[in-house]
Amino acid sequence: MLLEKINKENDIKNIPQDQLPCLAEEIRKFLLEHLSRTGGHLASNLGAVELTMALHYVFSLPEDKIIWDVGHQSYTHKILTGRKEGFDTLRQLGGMSGFPKRSESPCDAYDTGHSSTSISAGVGYVCARELKRESYYVVSVIGDGALTGGMAYEAMNNASQLKKNFIIVLNDNEMSISENVGGISSYLSNMRTAEGYNELKMGVKKSLNKIPGIGPATVRRLHKTKDSIKRLIIPGMFFEDMGITYLGPVNGHDCGRMIQIFQEAKKVEGPVLVHVHTQKGRGYTPAVRHPARFHGTSAFDLEHGIPLKNSGKANYTDIFSTVMRKFGDREEKVVAVTAAMPDGTGLKRFRNMFPDRFFDVGIAEEHAVTFAAGLALGGMIPVVAVYSSFLQRAVDQIIEDVCLQNLHVIFAVDRAGLVGSDGETHQGCFDLSYLSMIPNMTVMAPKNKWELSDMLKFAVKYNGPIAVRYPRGEAYDGLEEYRDPIVKGRSELIFRGRETALLAVGSMVKTGVEVCEKMKAEGKEITLVNARFVKPLDEKILDFLAQEHSLIVTMEENVKSGGFGAAAADYLRKNYPNVKVLTVALPDRFIEHGNPEKLKALAQIDAESVYRRIKEETPDERTS
Image (cartoon, rainbow, N blue to C red; front, side):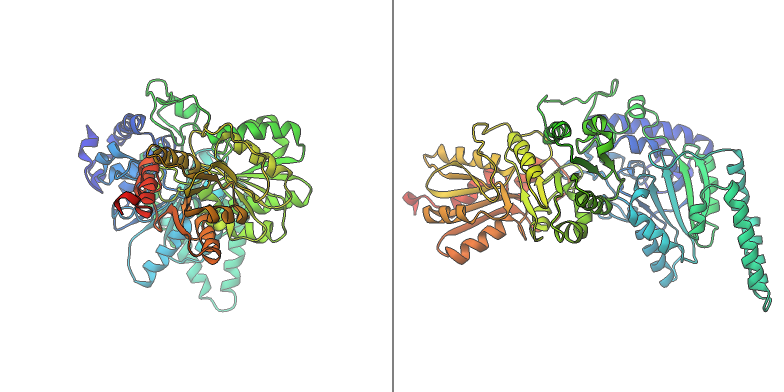
């Protein structure tokens, strides 16, 4: 097998070009066999096999730098840099990351996980290279979906000023940019990348510029005439007008052709964009037919493409989807906004039933929030459905465009808390902190599936900025009998006990129930309160708890700094200095990938850890 000859970076250079298609087939088989067991990002990686092979064939790692936008398509890159064995523990605690990670390999030039950042990072690398007078190549690989993010255009605008080589590879898998292929385009790409053509163009330009008076003007006229002709027949003139040489499009599954065009791209002085056309999910029919379903998949049956585990229980995204579908019928002013995540956020059903009231703005969270502000000012009730870690990208817009104007925009914050396998870049650990700091913002978190529905209904009737944050995974179906009406700033008393009180936020209410059961087994009844509102803080419940309990434990799946526990502890220490406060929250560090339950145990926010910490704070009187 050819794959056996790939044990470290640059080994692919020893494979004859005519054997590369066989190697691509082996890599796809390897990916399918492993990801069907571990899960992972499948469709994007199957589509980028030959592209990655060609890059590794032309460039030398780790000296040359390949920056993967988002990074979820970097599995072949990991294989070609000697990490085949790591796929047995892909995205598992202590195992290999599903994204590029500099601590994992010197061949990973940039830690990624969010979109539209690769060109910016590449420009930074190029400028550093020139300042240090080094000579490596820099390649930023960005997908057409990521090119919908405004940051990519900011970076290209900056890149246009570069005088030295910088290569941008546009991986177009038909998600955003329309197909543009044909004989004339290939012919012009070949002509314009030929060494003789580039040398002639630069030579003529330099010679004319030396002629006093008429030289520069002649160059400008020739340039204008040339561009007028190119606009008629050459694709990619948008990039050319920005000062970025455009090459392509090229078949992204033809290794030989891509090797040739990448070699030519290395000769360009200044920024150059290579447009590569690929097929998402290539080589696996279920992934080709359903690329969104196989974007990020759990373990699945390889023959049929069906997930191996399916409890049949609804998750929080399902609940949100159902409620939004009902809002579509009942509330004509409700509209839905997503940043390229209609399936992931649960808006697919709303989109299908109410297409005129559904807006997918692309990977552009900043625009999504300000767009929602405009919708609110126009008399609509926008629901912005977004993952917690992606909403971070729009904090300025939440502050300036929504909260400053006190607009009725609803933020449905999915994947809040520890999400698991995608790791540091996707953990939703900060939303309670960055949302709670903003004036006029109201922040809620449901304890179970029924409360999510109730909170969304409350949010629609509310008048002002409001966020409902909920976790990934199965919706908790316990405590069904506890369903007090939602009142702004009011908590919900679940169990009433003595001495110790648990004040839990959202997903941590379930953990609180487990802690109460452990304490009850020892004959101790403790109080459990469902906080419901992170902002405004329910000071009345804090007053009540402080008067009847010697220890108050706050529980949240968010970082401690700036979170719910910090606010509650500050109030209690100012007003009840004799009451002990234990803040249970995520530690001040980025949390790696792994099973969420194991990560909770490591972070000491699981039931066993909370129970142990309470015991340490309240030693048994018989042993004291």
